[in-house]
Amino acid sequence: MTDLPLHQDSAVAQRRVSPRPDAPEPAARVLLVDASDRGGIAHYTRCLRAALAAEHADVALAAPAGVGDPDLVIRGPRWGPDVDRMGKARLYALRLTEVPPSILALAKAVWRARPDVVHVQTEVVPGVDPLLLRRISRRRPVVLTIHDPMPLEGGARAAADQARRWRAADALIIHGEEPRCFVEASAPGVPVHVVPVDLMLGGPAVPRDEARQKLGLEEVPTVLLLGQVRPYKGIGLLAQAWPRVAAALPRARLLVVGEAYDSADLARLEECPGVEVRRGFVPEGDLDLWAAAADLLVLPYAVGSHSGVLHRGLGAGTPVLASPPLAEEVYRTGAGQIVPLDPVAWAEALVAALSDRPLPRPDPPTGRGTARGTLAVYQEVLATRAHRVA
Image (tube, rainbow, N blue to C red; front, side):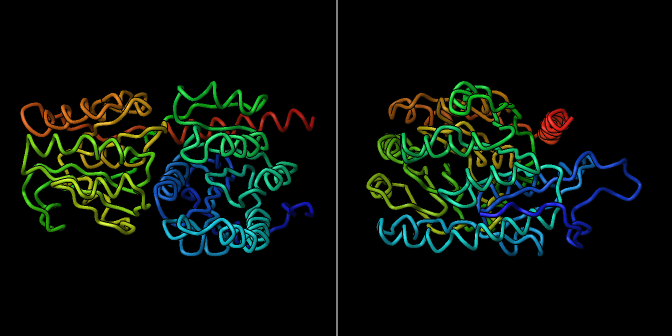
C-alpha cells in the first residue's frame, strides 16, 4: 500500500459544512469517517457533525453514497440480516471483493478533504483497518470513537481484532467511564478520553396519541424494542419474562420493530401472547414516531455501554427499562430505571411500569458537552503531534 497523499488542494475542501462567514476562526478541520449507510451510528455521526460545526469546527463527512459529502464517498462493508445469514465461504468471498475499492475510496477521501484530524466512527475495511489507519496517521492524527467497547458478538477473537484497530489510533473516545480500564488495557499507550453523549439524537417530541394514530397502533399499554434486533439485546430474557407480563396485563403489547436477525430466542419471543415483530429497517423519520408511541422502551442488553435507542427515548420523552451494562448512561441522563438481568425481575418491573408505578418522562438533552469534549480531544492530539514534530 502506498502512502496516502494528504496535502493536495481540492474543491471538495471548500464544500465542507463550515461555520458562518462571521464566525470565529474554525477550531479544526475535521474529516469524520463513517462507513455505515444507515442505523444508529450513522445518525450519531450526522448529529455530531452538526454539533461540531455549531462550535465552529470545519467538518467534512466521508460516508457511503447519499449519506456523506458527494465527493467524499467511501464504501463500507455490507451488513444486515441478509449478510448475517451467509455461510463462511460466501461471506469471506464478499469481504475480499470489498477490500480494494474500500481502501481506495478512503484514501481518496482523506486526500481530497485535507483535514487536520481524521475522526473514524466505524470499521471501514474489515481486517485491514489497523494497517490503513496507521498509514493515515503518518500524516494526520487519527481519533477513533468506540461506541461499543465490549464486543457485542464474536467473543475473544472480536476483542483481539478491535484492539489492533485501537492501537493504530492517536486517541480513543468512549462514552462512559465504566469501560475505560478494558480499553486502556487493550490499547496501552493510546490516550483514552471519556466523552459522554448529550447530543439530541431524537425528537422533536411527538404527542403519544398522535404517534399512535400515525402508526395505526391501539390505545393499549405498549412496550417497544426498537432498532436492530440481535440476541445480545436481551431477546431471550424478554421471551422468558413476557408471558408473566401478559398474564398480569392481558391487553399489554410488546412491539419488536427493526432489522431482525433470526435466532431461536426471537422465534420464542414471537410466539408469546401480545408480542408483534415488525421486521425491516425503520426509516429515520419513523424512529421518533415509534419511540413516542410507546409507554416504555426496553433495553435488556447483555453487553454494551451506550444505546442510541435510549437517546431516542430522551428526545421523545419516553422512559426506558434497561439492564446493568447501560447503568452509567441511564443514571447520567435520567432516562429511566435499571433492572437486573433476571426474567422475574424484568416481568415485575414491566408490570409495575405499565400499571400502578409508571416511570416519569425523562427530560431531553440540552448540552453541548459532546461537541466540546470531542474538540478538546482534537486539540490534544494536534498539540501532541506538533510537539513531536518540534
